[in-house]
Length: 169
Image 1: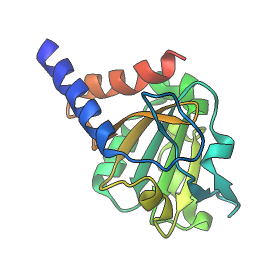
Image 2: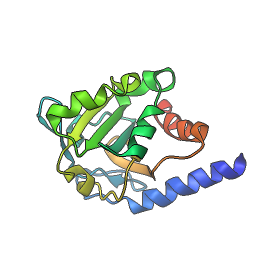
Image 3: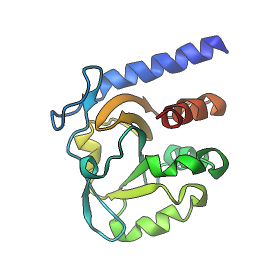
């Protein structure tokens, strides 16, 4: 078990070094600033994540419509574990139009109360300098602290990674 935790930490640290951000708002020295990321709400309103970012620790999850691994990852986020923290979870769905976002979210009733956004032209995907999906990013205020590309095969380690972050605000 200790070996798995070290592997998880290594994956997180390695991925965090691959995430790049522009110099928007200053972040602590150990963090990269969240770049200007514009996405669309279900009502087609353009939203800048920097303007809606909560204070403290939060998660940004990027998935794509019609991606099996994205769908599998979202299905693992269950209300009994993630429910109390959904106000700190922001999910961007690439390749989906804002008008179709509500239909997409219906497949994930356990996390329906999270903040959902559409990225139809993959602009946010490029602004965040991502290279695959799904991606989970741990942020503190407006600074990127770590990132995880894909999902861990060990469900308990995956939940622990995400939940330990949002629980300790």
